[in-house]
Every structure is written in structure tokens, then in C-alpha cells.
Length: 569
Image (cartoon, rainbow, N blue to C red; front, side, top):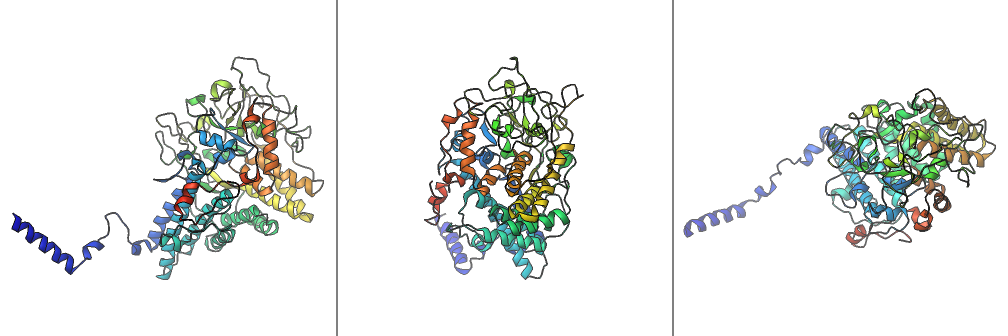
């Protein structure tokens, strides 16, 4: 036996000495670089990159609920929304909301991890595409998709964290990830979107994939975020006047199955739900449904603020109260902390009809489920900071229950409602903002584009009362006759963005772009205390450091000294 063992060992050693070919066997299920460097291989890598849009991936770092593509929890860092639920549920997000977060918080890390995963997947597709091009295949359109997606992920990182490392396709291929975050990466983002503009097809090939017009609008958005008003206006005006997009007739169709991938949707995360766990549903948004609400869901997060609700007030001419919507005495009637059976006097003042498609209010039909009864559908109590309102845009209509709805074992909802990263109303208002900032003759365009959005809201179907014979509230909205001056135009456009896009993940980045976040947020903290007693004392002041998220400390620790922290953190 011993001799036989020596013989086999000697034979195995001689094989090792003669050849190491056995070490080069491809792992089962793996694709070689040669296979990937083809049109089919690049398509596989692109699909993997698209799958990263929702923020979900295996072995992701940070808080799992932070890994989402719809930016819902970043709304909770603005004046549009509270975290929701009870204060102690998801305490890391509560700390971020009250400005007590730090660089060890799992919410920024969750986004950092997920977005860089998207960058790396896009880089893999780009590397394979370049190799395929060099081998003679013309796949410039697929490279355009890959660079569009990389531009998207890097844009998200840039506007969240400010100073981020730029990871190129060469860095990813060589596993070089300890790159210094020495400044903004706007130029690289712009280059990716410009490549996409030049190489994507002019018409949509498949739902969920961008075309050249989408890339042009996104490039305009990138320029707008940098306050490059004139070049942004040139791009956005072209998209508005010559592109294939238009507003849906119904405002609601941006948040239901009927309007998915419509002419208003430029680019959307494609979610899909079945009647079970729905792994292709919006898993990052599972917390954001009434608790228990009309269908016994969890978990009562993402509650609109009183401040946002007040913004929907209108005057006798159907125009917003631009300067004093949040003045003492102008709070829209609410029932915070009241039991359902306590008498409640609904708001009698005039309101923008988009309010009740954005916010669930007591006594008003909630997404076709009937009048929202009040406290029994709100998990938060009077001792918490979250208030009396429900989110509406992310919750399916009653007519779509079981169609857009996937439900898990603990009441979590994996919604199938697409998330519009960009829709045409957003493009119109970005164009109007750029036009207002440029001023002069362009104020006419700002007026036209704002009024296109307002007229759609005016002519949309209003939420109706329980009997179905009258509007549910005193809705009144009209377009502007004119803008008295440039300052008025700028103020009107900014307010319109909040009304049209509230609870869609845009507000925090708008405030950062405008440079007034510190003023707006500290006023919000005080104003919100009129509805939620004691809330103001729980917040720390908003300071300039909150204009950026902290670079996660764990990322700094593993970067071998390459990454540095944002100021103040």
C-alpha cells in the first residue's frame, strides 16, 4: 500500500513538472473573455448592468433598505418627507433625518456600494465592447448604452457624495479600486453622456433602454446640476421642441401600469411584480407602504411632510402661494394624533389637484381604496416625528392590486410600478429653470414650459369624493399669465418642480443645486413643529456639511489611504 502511494505521488509530481495546463481549465459556467468580446457577450454584460439600476446586488455593503434606485430615503433628508414609521425603526435613517448621522452610518454606505457596483458592471460591458470593436464588430450603440449607464451611476454618486473617485474600465479590468477622490468627476460624466448622444439610436428600440434623445436630456440634467444654464438650455430646448416625448393626458399615468414606458417616460427602472415575492419588484422600497392600510401591508415609512402639503395651497386665481404657503395660519388641515372616530374638519381652502395623487390625507380617496380613515392607517403615533400623511405615488391603485403587487411573508410589498428616473415633465421644468436663469427673451420659454405642466394638472381627472359626484377637495389651479420679472420666474419654476415631482426623489438635489438648502431646511425644521409638537427640538441644525453625504468610513478604511472625507464629517 505504501509503495502504491509513492508510485501515484511520483506520477502526479511528474505530471506537474511536465505541464500546468490543468490549471487553465475554465470554471464551469464561466464565460471567456473571447466570448464576452462579442455582440452577444456585451449584451449579457449590459443586462447585468441594467439589473444594477434598482440598487440590489448580492454581498452588498451597508443597510439593505438603503440600496435602492428610487432615492426614496434621500427625500427624508429634505423638506418633502419624513423617514416615517416609529422613530426607533431604522434608527440609522432617523439619525440621518435629524442631522445626527455620521460616516459609519449604513445608509450612505448602502448607496455607495450599490452605485459603484453599477459602475463596475458598466465598465465590464465597455471593456468587452471595446474589444469587440477592435475585432471588427460595430457595436457602437451597445457601447452607447454602457456609457449611458455608467454616466447615470456616476452622476448619482457625484451629486450625493461630491468628491468621488473615477473608476475607469481599465481600473475595473485591473482591479484597481483604490483611486483618490481628488475632486468632482463632472467631465467624465459629461463625456459618457455625449458618447451616448452620438451613438445611441434616435428611436427607442426596447422599453427600458435609452435612445439618443434620452441621453441628450440627461446631459442637460448633468449641466443643470452644475448651474451651467446656457448649455443646459440648448440641449433641453432641443429635446422639448424636437424630441419624441410628450406629457401624458393624466397625471396619474406616471405612477400606474397604464403609463409605464409612455411618451412621458424618458428613462425608467423596469420593475415587475407577480403575486408572490417578486424578485424583480422594487425591493428597495419595501418599507414605504401604509401600515396596515387597506391591504395589510408593512411598514409605514416615507411619510410626506406638512411642509410639502402646504406647498399645494393656491390663491383665488389658482396660483401657488410662492412666498407665504408656509406662513403661520396657512397649514393645511391635518388630523395628527387624532383617532379615526374623532371629529375632523377637512381643509376648505383651494388646493392644487396634484396634492391628492402625491399624498394620502384623511377623508380623501387613497389610490382607489376609498377615503383614508386617518390614524389607523398610520404607524407613527403622536410621539414620533413623522406626521399624519401617507405616500401615494409609489403605492399601486386598488384596480392594480395583484397586478403591480408582490407581497412577502411579513407584509413587505415588492411593487411592480416602474420608477421614472426622468420623465418629460421633469425635462420641461429643467428647461424652464435654465431659461429663467438665462433670462431675457428666454423668460417666454420658461413661462410656456411651466404652463404646459400646470395645464396638464388643470385638465387631469381630479380625485373624487366617496359618492363619485364631485371633486374630493376644493381644487383650483390655473396657468400663469406672465412672470413679472426674472426673480419671479425663477421662484415659480422652483416651486413648480416641488408640486410636480414631490415624493419622486428629486427634492434634495434641487436644494443642493440652488444653494439654499441650509436656509430652507432650518426654516422647515421650525415650521414642521406647528404640526408635530416637539419635532423641532429633535433636529440638529442643517449646516453646509449636509450638502453632501459623508464618504463611508469603511470605504476610506479599505482604500489604503486613497479616499479622503468630505468637509465637516
